Length: 66
Image 1 (tube, rainbow, N blue to C red):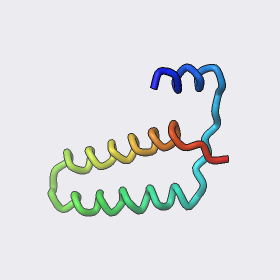
Image 2 (tube, one colour; image 1 turned 90 degrees about the vertical axis):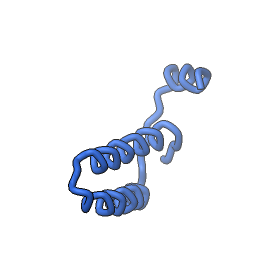
Image 3 (cartoon, rainbow, N blue to C red; image 1 turned 120 degrees about the vertical axis):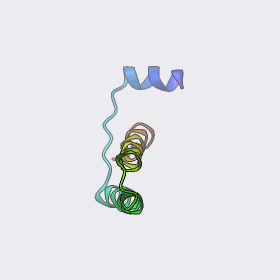
Image 4 (cartoon, helix red, strand yellow; image 1 turned 30 degrees about the vertical axis):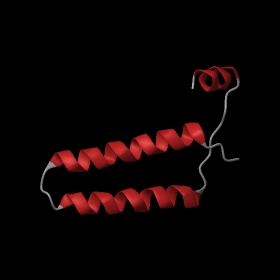
């Protein structure tokens, strides 16, 4: 992991997710959010939104799509 960090720090990388990738991400997490919305508590929804953000960040750091 450190080697990857050092490499990317020296060689900036632009990551672009294509529309279909964003659509899949949005559809998946929208479904999860709908499932927890009926629980009438903020915590489950916050967890789903946080997970969606984490997955997007991981994808942008892991997969390089040009």
